[in-house]
Image (tube, rainbow, N blue to C red; front, top):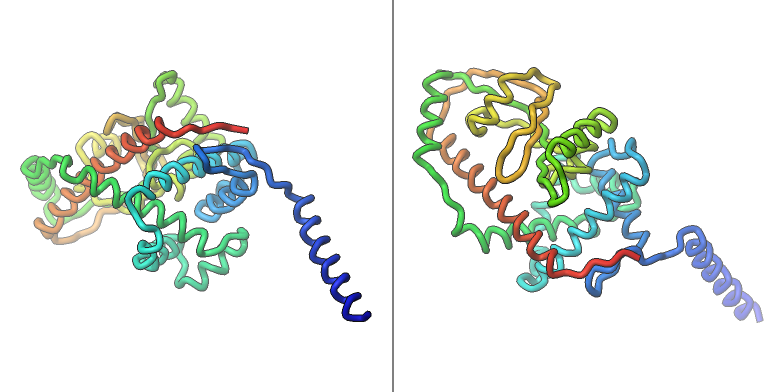
Length: 313
C-alpha cells in the first residue's frame, strides 16, 4: 500500500511539474521553413544566445530583439538544410573544439569551463552553441569549396600599394581598432532612407546593437567588432575615409562589394615596427580572397533562400 502511494505521489509531482512548465511557456509554432519548424521557445533561446554574444542587446526593445532572433534562426535553418546535402554533421565534430575555443577566447574567457558557466546564465548549453558554430563553420567550408576557384586576385596591384605604403611610412605601422556595419539595399529600399534608418538606430540603440540589427557581415553577432587591422590591409577608399575622422567617430557610408560599409574607429595607434614584406603581402592577398568569398556567400545564400518556402504562423 505504501509503495502504491509513493508511485501515485511521484506521478502527481511529475505531472504537476510538466503542467506547470507548459502553462508558464506554451509551445507555439511561429515559422515553418519547408518541413522544419521554429517555435516561440526556439526564438527565446536564440534571443538568449545573441545576448550572450553581445550583452548590449538587453537595451533594445523586445520587438527588435524578437525580430533579430527570428531572422537569425531562419538564416541558420536555411544554411543547415543546404549543408546536409554535402556534409555529415557527426564527422564534423572532430574539429569543433578549436572553433569553440576561438569563440570563448574572443569573448575573453580563459577556458571551456568558464564559458559553460557563463552560458548557463542564459539557459544555454555548450552543445547548443557547438551546433550553431558547426553550421557557420561548415557553411564557410562549402563556400570555399564551391567558389575558391572563381576568386581573382590582382597580386601585382596589391604589391604595388604595399610598396607605396612602406615607402611613405618607413618603419611605422598604423593600426585601427574597427567595428563595421555592412548592408545592402533591398529592391524596395532607397539609399538615403536606409542610411538615415541605420544612423538613427546608431544614435538611439548604439553602434553594436545596430550592427546586430542591420549588418550582413559575420561580425554582426559580436556587435560589428572586427578588432585591430593594419592600415596596409585596407583599400585606398577606406583609408581615405578613416583619415578624415577621429577615434569614436563614424565614416560616411562607403560603397564596396556591391553594398555599403559604415566603420566606427574605436582606437588608432601608430607603432614602430619593421615590416616583413612577404608576410604583409600574404596577409593582404588572404584578406582580399576572404572579402570575395564573403560576397559569394551572400549571393549563394540568397539563391538557396529563393528555393525554400517560409511561412509565418
